[in-house]
Image (cartoon, rainbow, N blue to C red; front, side, top):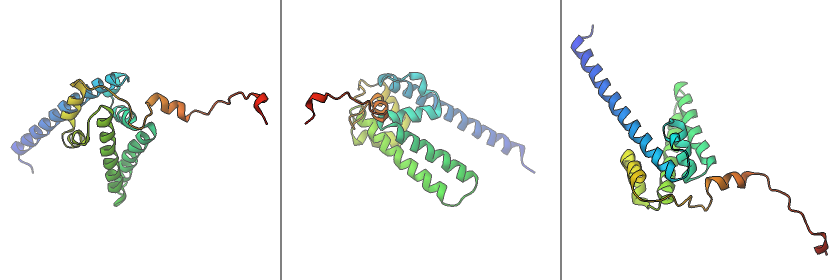
Length: 168
């Protein structure tokens, strides 16, 4: 039914794409490892696919938005598998827009501007490697909070003792 030469050619094309995907993954993992190390997070988080997105969004934005971005991707994939019309595409689009905003916040957290954000969106691996190996330092989130402060801000406040002599 199929020509064996065509099957060999398709297998070779598939192998080439697999090698390219592996090279992109390795380069991205190296870049994330270095970026996370610069920002004070464990570098090995860059190797694990969902964890590296979580940490990247957490460094740039906050942990709530990391949940939103990952949740949109997971729910969108499930709905796509269930063949629900339109909604998975909208969720993917929303996730993509949130990732653009996260890349913008990441570039600002390392002292770069909007042009660098465009590079992160269009030439992701290259600009992640630039961010990883250039001499910029992690300035922290531009909202003024660090990832450690987020945990403190969300914790329940401690009651301060009051001085009863100042009551009127």
